Length: 88
Image (tube, rainbow, N blue to C red; front, top):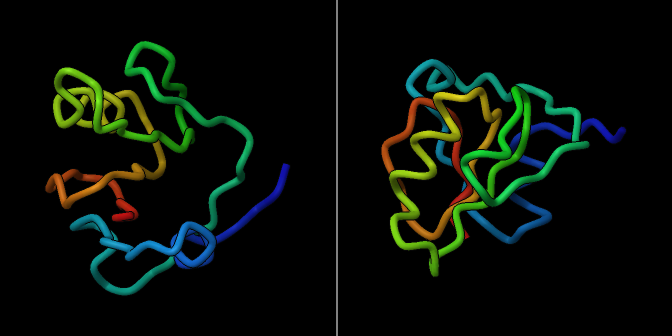
């Protein structure tokens, strides 16, 4: 597994990091990259979730992914999630 911090992931994806309320202090947690998912039913704790814009309700699926333990959500807009997001 590769470990990257949230800012490094945002840079790789050419996106902008939006920290969660808990991370607003500027703490940039490291994430062990190994599990990526695009469906809410496939999320495991620590996964990076990609909210696909073509999903019928991408925002609801992203909220479900956050509740299931996703460490980071990659999305097209700020969804106000309780986990960090990378906006691409």
